[in-house]
Length: 94
Image (cartoon, rainbow, N blue to C red; front, side, top):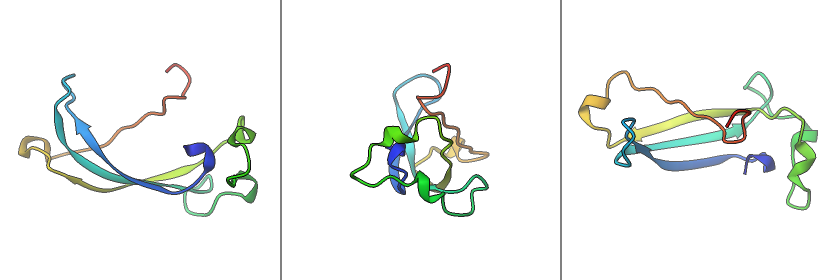
């Protein structure tokens, strides 16, 4: 629910990159709404309360800082040179 522009922290499964559905570990991450630089708070007009419709933000740029808090239960062979990628399902071409 990025449209509500609030902080969120989650722990999610890491799946195999070989295309199987095997769980290879867990990752704890958080995202925080921020300004375009990633260090300050978002503009007031970007904050939506429970009574407002998040569709009011359509066409506006939203910025979030993503933090990886922890990765655990990774197999030893995958515990070196690890990295994280992500994509939003609403991005063009998805």
